[in-house]
Image 1 (cartoon, rainbow, N blue to C red):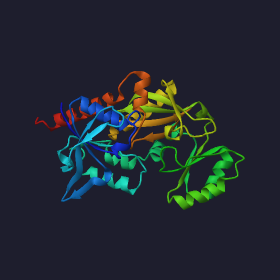
Image 2 (tube, rainbow, N blue to C red):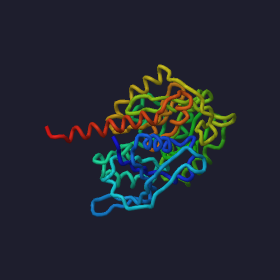
Image 3 (tube, helix red, strand yellow):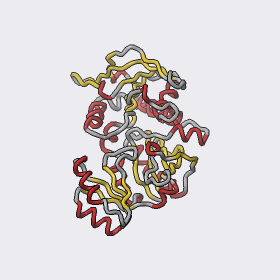
Image 4 (cartoon, helix red, strand yellow):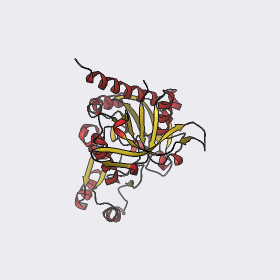
Length: 322
């Protein structure tokens, strides 16, 4: 099977080829003989019911400082592609949401991974609320009084922006910390959205586990250990990835959410688990597959492409005349 694949991502020249999940997906696509095209999110155009992108043919290689070659940009009708990988990083803002609306016009005739409707309807810190029995005590509010009452009940809390990413803007407020009022004032100035407040999970000192699910099935995991004096374990914030396997509780979490992921067309998902609690479901541009590959000696990118190709085959079979 040879597919035409368009990758919507951030600037390829600035990626870390030893960590970037999109780069691993592009390498695997190329290894399979798929034709790859690259474009930036702002290169999307909608006209007369068609969705176009100013895209360039892409070749990739694992050579630091020389990891890609681009062809001349051309106006590509994305309906002529077999697959579009929506892989730009958050923030999950109106530009991101607009891109999902545009890509909705071509899906599922062109398979968009992940399904743009589900991406729009499943921001990481909100989607997890559909699985309330799996998540720690959580409050989403713009009310200072509600936050104060939650802190009174749980004492040790985490406060973070509802649509943040990479650990940015995450604050640990222990019981004697006097900065909560000032922090809420700052959040009010910076964000129009409610804040999300959760009970602090001391188990985070042992790590915040990233589990990758492919078509609803766990493919692998890494544990991310926060550095000393830091409440955040995100690798962007200095978290150290270490080899990990799944506990029985984590397997239960995957089994509980897996069918919903498949139903919503969320092929490539990264969930975050601290202790026994599911804290986030990442559907925009999950990371961590290269770290898992190195620790476990597998290729998560290959598993993802297997899942994509299965979906392409199933769609083709449904279109055959009876």
